[in-house]
Image (cartoon, rainbow, N blue to C red):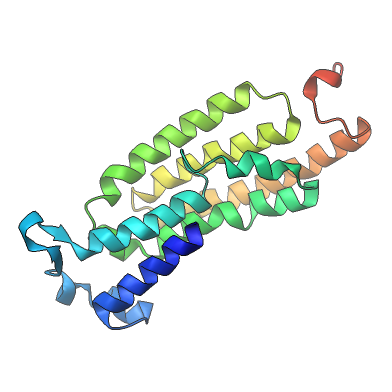
Length: 199
């Protein structure tokens, strides 16, 4: 679904700007600032393009309402789960927002929707992790919570802090999965924390 939204966003971008070179588009925004899709509703084309790219970023980064796939991916082996959580998928949505930030600056929905979605995701992820019994699902909901914090941080415009948080989260999550893999191996492949005694 997120790939489809990115595809539609790219098509709309090419239709609007007659160009697919992202550097040219991002440097010439002032020329297109008066582009309206519906003049009577004062609805900018930037808002429509931002809607599709933001939807793709929300799904990739497992934001609230689109977070179901991340705990379910924990049925994969520990190395595959570590790769999904620390490096590739959950970071893709945050990086998409950082890369297209000049586009989102011209959109009114970005500064309204994104902080609310990020805060709600962080709260939901932390609360859900508290009630899990599966060791890997605890890490999954922890990742959802961190992605919510990262999504909120992108709206502040501080790219250095967002990238630092992204790197730290990746390293922390990779090391956490190394530890979890060892714990599961020592407990004869049990992932239920209720069957681990005093460990």
